[in-house]
Every structure is written in structure tokens, then in C-alpha cells.
Image (cartoon, rainbow, N blue to C red; front, side, top):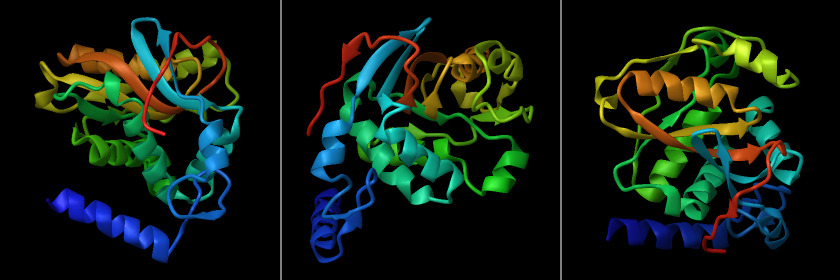
Length: 223
């Protein structure tokens, strides 16, 4: 009942006070304008023993949205992005999955003031009803900024970078959440730490994926 009332209230607010399209920033009664919605390219692709589910490629319009989220103090963009991830990739999520965001090192978190992956996980949890744990992983090392690094450099930067610090991870089915997956070095390192703590990790949800691999299958979801 409360969920229905909340939905009706949000629809009323959308009409009375239109929001900003997460893509092009024009005022719209919803999260996306029709043009930006049509430009999303949701897909599912294999990354070793992980399955990566993204909303689109980083070199498309979504890349600019992610950069605003991360580097231009726009944490509000995590709401529509995470909500859309939860909608379009609901089919890969089990009812008992635990959403775990890729953490920032405390120095980077202090600088940015928020972890974009944690905000995405919270939005996905709200859409799907799944539990999320923003403190399940700890980042032990403060690596150089990954953007622009080679695959070898990325892998070296995140070696033993993560520590799982929650007992409830043992036996849990974890879905990792991040904003961008490039070579996959970060999510593989995080998955390794979670598996060492007894969790099962097979799925990664991200906003963008670089065009390093071809999509295996297209995700279906409500338009």
C-alpha cells in the first residue's frame, strides 16, 4: 500500500515539478527524455567467470552522465541511473542477492564526499527490494586514478586492494555494483575478496562498460 502511495506521489511531483533528464539535462516529467532513453544500450556480457550487466557503453551519452556523477558533484544522478539498472536488469537478480558496491579508499572518499557506487547500490536496492551493504568491502590501498591506465596497470593497482569485513558474507549471493567496468581488474579483485569470505559472486551491475568485448545478449526490460 505504502509503495503504491509513494509511486502516486512521485508521479504527481513529476507533473508539478519536472525533473532533469539524467542524460541531456532538459526538464522532463520523469528520469529520462525519450531521446536519451532510446540511446541506452543495455547489455549482458561475460567477463571471465563474472557476468557484467550495463546500461550502455562508456563512449556513448552515458559516459558524460557518469563523469558528472563522479567529478562534478552530482550525486543525485545515482538515483535515476541505479533505478534504471534495477529495472532493465531485474532478470539477473535473485531474490536473496546482496548488493555490494565497490568501495573508495577513505582518502578518495574524503575528497569526493560520497561513493558513487554505494549510491547506485542504494538506488538499485530501492527499486528491487534487495538488501545492500555499503560497508561489506573495504579498500585497503589508495591506487592512482584508474582512468587512462592500461590493463596491466589496472590489474597491478588493485592487487589485494580489497578486504571483506562482514561475517554475513559467508554463504551470501553477492551482486557487485560499480559505475564503470573497463578491463574488469577492479571487480575481479573485489570478487576474489568476497569469495575468500565465503560469498558467491557471479554478477556485476554497472552503468557503463567500455567497448572491449562484444555483448553476449541484450537485456530486456520495461521501456
